[in-house]
Length: 285
Image (tube, rainbow, N blue to C red; front, top):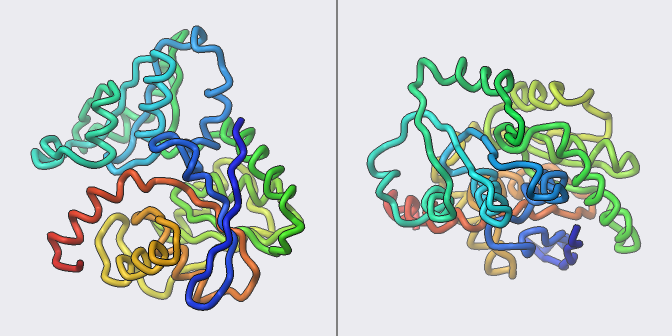
């Protein structure tokens, strides 16, 4: 597994370090690269098909599509029904994943939950189910590698590690493997209760994992003026981050912490093109 560099980064007069997992590959990068570590080590003849599900903005979807393209595996991705505009869009993660060979299947809203639950019960030989966002015990191995890389950089003097959360898989397994560090995260998809529920389905939450919650309620993937402003600030400071998770994580870090922090870049910048278009449409940029 490749190791990523660490960059110094100054934001609002405060120095941070950034683990540049975004530089692995345009599509297969960030925490999704770490979560797919086990599958990336498996001989390609072991599988012929990968199945997953989730949203059409998903970075995991795109990463899996790239992995399947490399390994010549069929990739089937299930979602709830999507709009005609989304299907016709020529930018963004969904469009790129389709170009990489992903087969997209829509499941009606009222049938979706039951259908997804049935996928685990019907796995065939040569077929692998990857749960939404890569939330799976198999993700632990890749995050153990990341934890070792972080520990190897302890001479930089940081006392905390930070990564935003969807399902919380990355933050959870990092905290379990780095008990000597505080690991900060913030829920970007649901609230704290949702995040805890997702984590507890994988493991007991360790005491060094600190969940920072914004005082303002944000809806996932919705454009916000303060998010695009933070995106512009971080890009001007020298690093582009994703627009779905990073702005809320940076906002809470700046407001709620004083530690010397190593931020784990979770990739996802491939989706910024379509998100920036939404900001323009909303006249927020």
